Amino acid sequence: MIIDAHTHFYPSEISENPDIWADKRKEKYWASLVGKRPDGKLSLQGFPSEKKFLSDMDDAGVERAIIQGWYWENPETCEEFNALISNLVRRHSDRLSAFASVQPRFCKHSVEVAKHAKEQGFCGIGELHDGVQRFSYLDENFEKLAIACAEENLPICVHLTERTPRQYLGKVDTNFEEAFSSAKKYTSTNFIFAHWLGSEIFENPQNALDLFKNKNVFFDSSASPLLCKEDAWQKACNFADWAIYGSDYPLRLYPRKFKVEEMRTIVDEAKRNIDKNCSENFFRNNILKIIK
Image (spheres, helix red, strand yellow):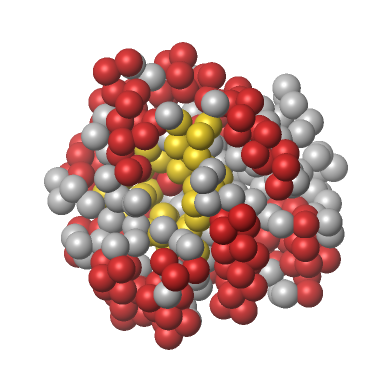
């Protein structure tokens, strides 16, 4: 059984006119990702229908997908988006799970979302992006959110942007030191650091191992083909107890091969490269340690 722990979905209310939807809600960052690119290239963001999402799961052999929330800039957008995703998950509870979107700068709202997340069908909080949402992992607002998540047994998914000179549309820096410090401080809260822990497991493996000591930190493989060479999968097996499979579907992860989103190629790449001794933990067991 393959669980894809890092996907996204935008219902038709959003996907039919995503840039207009974003502009009306003053979501400038997301609008920059889904609108017309300055370089004239096709956006990497795909917008599958509900039917195609499930069909792509079937084609890839993914039995369950976890839909991550988005790092919306406004709490009202989080609320609207959560309602749409909650309804989606309830319709397909046998195949789909989801994390709830929050804006940590608005403490009261984010804590309320965490407290009632399970009632709405959510099993985690995030994805969060401190650079886009303009908050600190060390301030009081995030502390209250982390405590609420610990009480509700909700993991927090954190976006980490790779610390490299490479530039691309939408690249916004994240504060690794603050994110890591919060994980060490709030040891009762489980954290999933996305994108190979911001590639930290490859660039600074000792730093990564230090994080794993408290056993509340995991990382996922989301967007790997856009960030890393294929040998990343083998290297990840050095951290088999903390690695979680995630794709970042429906991003077009192989833009030179496909003009529309698809899920199968990254699954095949991962299966081809992950050592059999760690594949069960990677594709299933590790995520089930922290969610039901």
